[in-house]
Image (cartoon, rainbow, N blue to C red; front, side, top):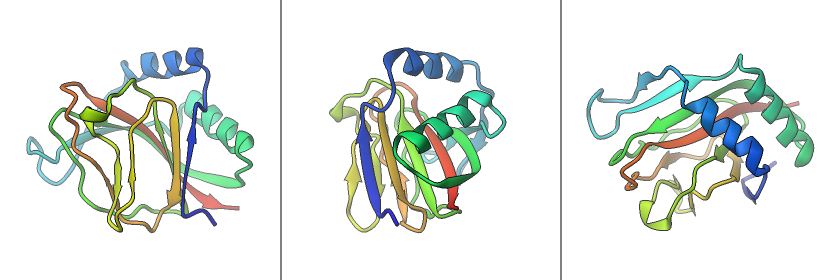
Amino acid sequence: MIDIKVYDNVLDDNFIDFLTYEISFFNWVVQGARPGGPRTFFYCDTSTLKSHNFLFHLLGKKYNLNLQLLRSYVNLNPSKNEGEFHRDDGDLTMIYYPLDWKDEFKGGTIFKRGDYIKYIKNRLLLFDSSLSHKADINLSGENRYSIAWKTKYV
């Protein structure tokens, strides 16, 4: 069982460049409690994308994770946006941060119990899906992207 685990420098620069290029072509769906309000964000389901399935298997092999993929997606949090506390489905959530980011932009992942994981480019966050969490406010002036995989233990 993993409570919260963080890995840095998980992918090479070429793969990160590919992922951020790919994200620029996604079709986004509004998600959130109040469309147009301060907690509105967008997502794109990537469950059928070979690149995101490949990445899931690559990370699983690299970090010796024996997981079944339930679904994957990319979140887009606009500037001045923050999430709301929630729990995820499945057993383990994986979140990858692909963008260059500064500490003053905030935008990390906040856990209701008090843990804070900074948004750092090329960081992978794994945590128990039952932990209540949210995206911190995005103060960058740009969109904040994160790639997520919902999984079950095999």
